[in-house]
Length: 411
Image 1 (cartoon, rainbow, N blue to C red):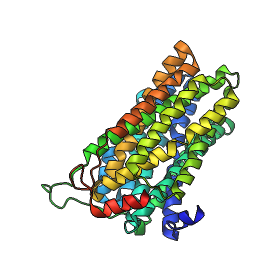
Image 2: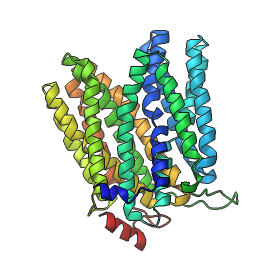
Image 3: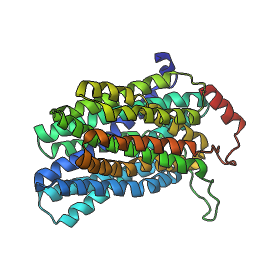
């Protein structure tokens, strides 16, 4: 297993991967940090949730625009600008809460922070695609490692921001996220040697490379459906632990779920698969449905921990396959933009997943609310089944010879 991962790492790739990991920690810290600080300052969870939602919606609205700018101008030119705007917006949002500024200003600064938060994960994957262009069979391993990094971020971030906000100062969690995000993104952006080349439009009337919509639209649906699963699972697991009289253990249960996904990602990256990314995506989506069904019948916390651990195993392989498929079909000039669609889908699915699950919990209890996760899994599978593979710049059902060979190596 270690030998497989050694093939992708050089000092340069290890550095951009590590700094990229640090730079995307705020993704898992800011939403919860805003809720903790805003509730402390105003005493209203409703206001805190609305503020967090505004940042989330703004991020979803501008992620694709950011991706397009990065593809055209390059990571080194765009990332420092947007992360500076993010830092300014987040700092002012925090200050407006502390200094009792008008409510509209707090929402405006939260929207600025959300809109300018860069999707560093897609930039890291674009760098892997660029640096491993002559060894496409290793991209699966690289994307697997990044999926493991994503899971690590969502294991460490929420715990860190909660401990800092409750044990040090209500603003300490967000303040740490602010520093980590700025330092990590600046350090990532200055590494120009591994940066993918920019693809500026020299002619305003030039034809842009076509987007493979037959793949990207269903993949965006897959991302949104996964967001529904994640958003619902968080809320329902907290409610389930509360019903069992151990609400404090909800974080442990969610950590076990993420740990199952992390382990699956590590193992997946070390395997030479005999199936291409589309087949693996469909298998992973089916696995998520199968893993979600037992959640509605779990009687106690120990059994729930085991079921969540096994259920987490389906997450990383599904995400890895989705990103691998996107990389395979997207034109280089629109790689970051295309991957941003999937990330946007994930962000868009979180809120309705959590909201619908909350309604079901209020009406019927926690266990039946896990059916929302089942529905999300079914939608994920439906999106995967709708995909018609379209390699870069070609008709939807044709495959370039060298891409077919790469897929065979990954198979």
